[in-house]
Image 1: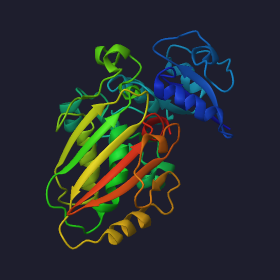
Image 2 (image 1 turned 90 degrees about the horizontal axis):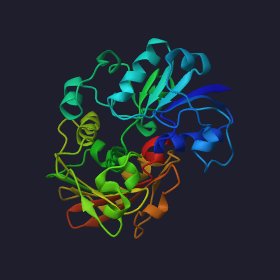
Image 3 (image 1 turned 120 degrees about the horizontal axis):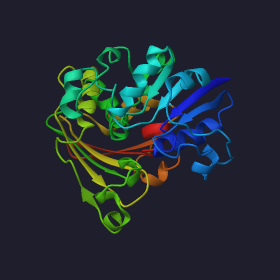
Image 4 (image 1 turned 90 degrees about the vertical axis):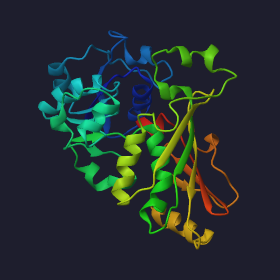
Length: 319
């Protein structure tokens, strides 16, 4: 039985992890800490659990943590996460980090988008944690950097077409929408109910969202001269889910059947990626409360329109 600890257990990602691990036959949650709710039982702090839990949430203490658990999920914001991941790795614990702190392989790129990085020594050992790309490396990793939610939704849709010898002629436009839980549990003026209900708003559009360099980094692994990306995220007035329409301008000569064959071959053995049949478009209803990514393909003259949907808290985070 694997003894697991969750740091940041009462955030949205942490709560989803508790639900998943409670139902895992080979995992026992033996340590839980949080920046708040300290002293509460998990079953009290997360009342929607299928079953109660008497484990008490503590303030993080490295000695107690490594005494109680051997494998950790760190569910803290960027910057704060590395302050916990570093001591855990120094003690030899295996870690899955849910923040952006170890996703970017170039520390100068991280610091340009997020701020100072105090554990650059761990960046090289981190494995980018998208199983459809790095399953074998993840299996033996000591530190896994969990991908971002927008990034997961986008990259799974783009991988087959980017990795193939298909000529792309122009910018790829990613028009994406996320539920409010993507902003985290801490309240912000633009995520209060009164600001979100009956509203639909763009933010950090074009090339200003922090998931953009992560997308570009991974796409460059697949193609030596990747096409430019334009990324426009929006806030949906729903609790959870991401839906992205991705516009890929193709050179002439490619038939719909050829492109569909690329996607079928890429994901034929991937249980959590669903390529929808012609005429069926991906929606949030295909994926919410699941670990699935649903992808539909639409062809409009010389453009491929990919519609990709995930649950940002599951396939986009805890799943």
